[in-house]
Image (cartoon, rainbow, N blue to C red; front, side):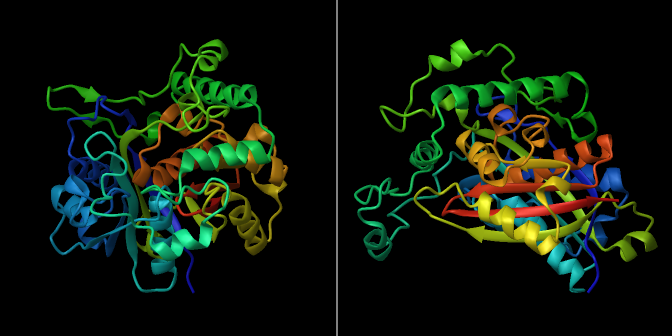
Length: 390
């Protein structure tokens, strides 16, 4: 079996919900990163065997296989296929895993993996219509479990799950607010240093403007301001909008091939996909699976947590990376060094590829050999990916 390497990675700046990207159709947002990826790597679009695209809310403008419509919107040859997948928040990380498996097994030579989400134009949850996806048998299985609201249309709730995690690991409101503030501070410092510049593909806007920087970073926030926010999930809770990821708009794309194919076509690999796993855990607490996913990835890789130079754990809610730190005993200084979704935003279907793009750039800038990325996902799942810098 061959290896799988990443030869290009690019993302849009992340826009706030109802922000700068609100006027951009998600297919066009996807097309923008596809074109930017081809331009920066020099790959010929007609050589792409498949586009595997993550998107969570596949309804309205994001319906009808947006992976394929993205290819058409990009002006790529009609011979390039595309498909769309949903592994909830980890959709584009799973797209990367599928792309790696396809090239390593010899089924394909070159695959583009990525994703999109316009949470402005297609609000989260808008794909649930005409009934609940949770059957009576699912409800019966979890009836009586703390946090499971069997009488509601959405009995599994990520905000309640975040509160369950905070209670289980005894995190205080202050700890969560401090983590959130640090995310904004790290992201602001990275932005000021130009650390994001090389991974970004600024988006032209209809008014002849240009959207070039992540706009979710709150430079004026403080512990005092965060302490004023309400706890919407439990009256006596500790999780707020300030310690949760931001609803956002964005897209990201990665080009995946083998080192042999890259060499023959004059492409420079950025990193090897060393290990790729998926795991599942309690669907009611929902957000704990990054912990077993990380353990599985390290075990399969034959690596210790101390050998990983950077960890990206998606900041869906502050308790998620904090619980991950507590269980893995990882170095907190290596966690989300350029901020995370609390500051940068979380365009659901795009976040896996966005985070990988940011992590790869950080690894290149700092000569880090191994990086690990993991994300909690709806249904109590998580992907974990270890990449090796080349």
